[in-house]
Amino acid sequence: MALSTRRFAQPWGTILVASRRPHPALRDTVVEYRAFTIHPARALAWLETPMALPAIYLSIGEPGRRFDPPGCPTAVYAAQTSALRFVPPGPWQGAQVMLTLDGANRLLGPRLWEFADTLPDAGDILGRRLADVPERLAQAPGWDARFALLDEVFLGLGPAYAGRVPAPLAWAWERLLHDGDVTRIGDLARETGWSRRRLQQAFQRHVGVAPRDVASLTRFRRTLETLVRAPAGLPHAALAARCGYYDQSHLIREFKAVTGLTPGALCAAPVLVHPTVLGAVYRHASVVVGEPAGAAAAGTRIPDVPGARAAAPPSVPMLG
Image (cartoon, rainbow, N blue to C red):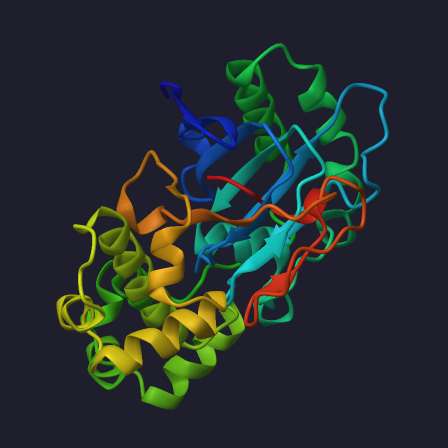
């Protein structure tokens, strides 16, 4: 359970990212822990690309200090189909507990459709079991100690709901995370032995979104990473052909639907693709989309980015 840390220095500030596998007894519940410490050099506007992974976010404040600006120190991050945008209030840090599909359903209940494309307070769902965790994390001396604390907390939680996700659904979900952009939903249903309708209903209940949404997010993630690493001036038509879109128009429509921005606009912005312990399928990215004057003030809204949803910083899982 070695700790992995990386530091990213950019003109707009620095970010320290840490990650670690959970205690072996939690492997059926937690994929990995991720954490971040962010020191922006100036006011920034952020765009967080979506994931098809459930998580619990824990904001970490200074011991005895109220969260500033006020907001929920915890959040449930179920499947997201569009990006989140927000202006951070200044330096801040937090942790994400990335859950397995089984773990999410045991801890949160088999009703993840209620949390899709929302950020509910985890305290409203898990109750007092997480009430003092953000402050305890703040008092811990470093990320080794903080991750050990998360092991202790989640080993002690116990399942709120019995039962496991149906095996055909778990297999189909993993398949889409790895190969979603090349997998036809009808073929996937046949391979599970279920009807297409039954597979759709199982995804809506236990994942929160349709299988085609998971497939689209897999394709979007791969395409964004390709775009970031591609030679400057790569034509959109070539990118679309390489990444499995019908044509250039299809590529642009999907990027605008997910982020509100064209591939060209995203490529021109600073993009950080976050490292993970377990590989590419668990990655997502954060994008600096603007630097509005006075954005550090609480409640300031960034310039409108059509297609992205506004969120308050304390409730938003920023990095992973």
